[in-house]
Length: 377
Image (cartoon, rainbow, N blue to C red; front, top):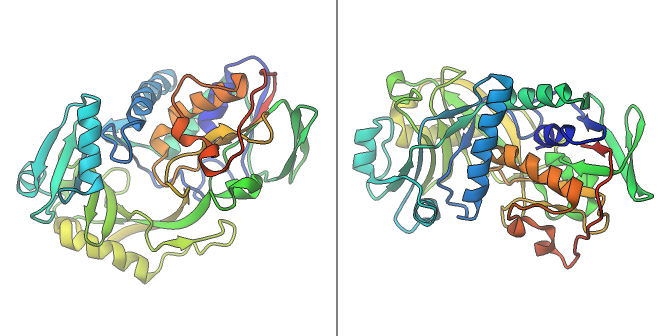
């Protein structure tokens, strides 16, 4: 979200500075792991679909500007028992927004895509425009484009504190102090450490993903295997075809339900992490259940309702809060960058973000002031 916001803000008048406590891209937050799902059929809520349509457009514009492919379409599968939110929510989004799609039972899904061997009662929505983004490449592309438009980027520099000051902000880091007219906080798992109002709203959670070597690799190529969200009795899982790492990538939403501090969390992957994922693969994707090639931690930052936070700070209108995304946000980064620019520049946006406002968790209301000149992300 920070790199996309930096890019959009760099194209407006004034100076823009982006600060990250690590090198970028890095593996300490929520934006690594080589692939991130993008899909139009959205079971979480149909109101995300207009944002997704804009996100697709903006990803393709970034590809054109940087001459690099970032978005790969494989199709997407949302599957679960009849009545499950994963299946019914996806189908509702497709029907409401007239998205091309097909509905399969588990037998037909296996016939079309042999890597899938889901329970007999499973129903699935297949949508042809789903696929994946390459997150590290996306971040690098945004930063290159932002710097080409004049943005300044500081890495390995931790923000220690910020405070409002004469209608603007002062930001104190491990290296220096900066003043600006606008501040965009897009700190992922560290959001509640920078915005105290979010302590009980933006909650970091340890997540693990693994790449398994397929026994039948031809079943798991991008041309033969759509990205997926699957609800089974063991929980909700997501996965990808074989891409940069020669393995089938899979994760379980909320993994082991471990609330963590991102500064002190256990980033080592344990036998129990592998077992939880391997058990799922062996049951439902047995042709992919070879040795693990790679296993990696990341962090979800969850809100109580698992929708985003996109808003102006309720107490300080010069501060924009940028989206702890509850594990499903990366695909939206392009359009969220546009929204952050709107909020920083005008205090409002034409995009419908009503369900993402902070006031749903409190009685505080955001106020609006005119745009100034300088911004810090």
